[in-house]
Length: 559
Image (cartoon, rainbow, N blue to C red; front, side, top):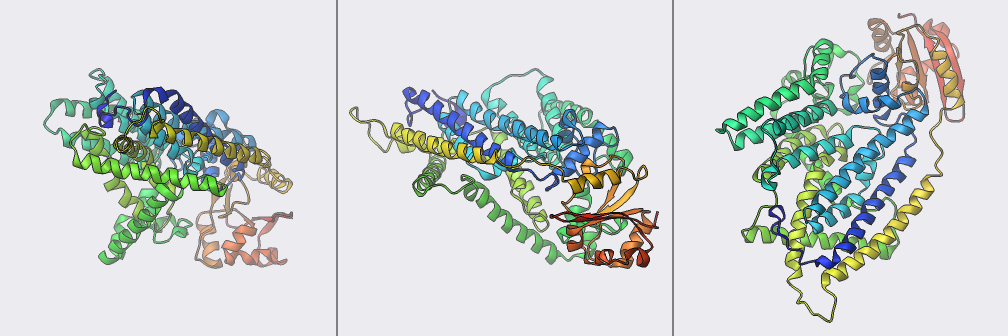
């Protein structure tokens, strides 16, 4: 069987008789990976960790008709959580499954897409990579938009292969689909706008004189504006710009990550203020350091994170390293063969061009942001495309390596021997994954402590629309409090006088502190004094503690 997107793969490494065995291996790999993700999901029990609480809070605000977005997180992923929304830990427990379902769909689509086109070795490599990847398991286990971003990036990139794969669509259907995917990406995350813009830019650049290209661009733009119109309209009325994002407008121009805990929103940095206060040397230095960090991160994503989440017995770990090494050799061999011999492309010209554009434009932006937050989830945006292309290169390499060993009728083929070993390895790792999953089922479900329950009762007695200065802290899942309450994080690098000035300027009537807030904001330590009411003139509304910490709620005289 030949396929133009796989270099004319003829299944020489594995004979057609091995297809049923290969299918079993693929199913086991995918199932093992999903079981590992389930383990991470069950172990994810912090109701306020990371951005999870913020996404739950936004979903509740959408469900109650109070907001579409918070200016930073885009609305599509929280909207998917609306049917589950309630101010109860059960919301957190159920919302995790949305990420899991989207991520599982992505993995299955990638593996099945290569398999049904006859790219069996590429499917095996993709399944082996994604199923034993700690970052992919994390992606499927947390409440955030990343799984949806990866899925939409994969679907949009696959559209660049439609010409080569000769899958005809109607005159309007294809650009309408592109516009819809672009709009959904923008509704999911700010980076989605860059991904969508690069898709259309590469399409126009490759065929600038084709009238059909500009017709498709016009149709796609109209559909994009229609799909994304709720967010464009909300941003225009709420923030004064249809494409407003706190991350791109302010956050990426911070010098330190903690600047996000700002004192005065009027003094937030922008592109203009950053250029005015930083030299060319500083700009180049930050970008260079960021690219170095992204290079190290890429090594981790493509190699170090390709492992089981728990240490394996040495023989199994050794076989895993051999498995990774064999695929690495196949990729190098496939790349060498592709450069030396003229053959069918691994993907379409547009596919290569779009992939290159994503790397050239996104990686520097990730590098610039790395000074503030250097997390694998950014580079993971490119993993679906990279995994498919590397899988196809490895497939070509395995085909070439199969010719190094002469066929002997009295002995099984090297491909069959390798496949049998991979099957045994997969069974062993699947067993360890099941053991890990069984252990994590014993992790206690997320709950609200008695102290938190008492505090919620007091918070729900506050006036409508009350403003509360609190945090940064993970001690209280604020999304479970009454929806109309307005939360304001306490600023960093200020003193008590500037803090009280902020309270007066923004008319904040309440202050809530806990042990984490005090640890991160030393200027609030005076609130722990027995004489605090006399010294500040504030009234203590709630004071209690348990074995894990304490909460102090004050009514100020600033409102």
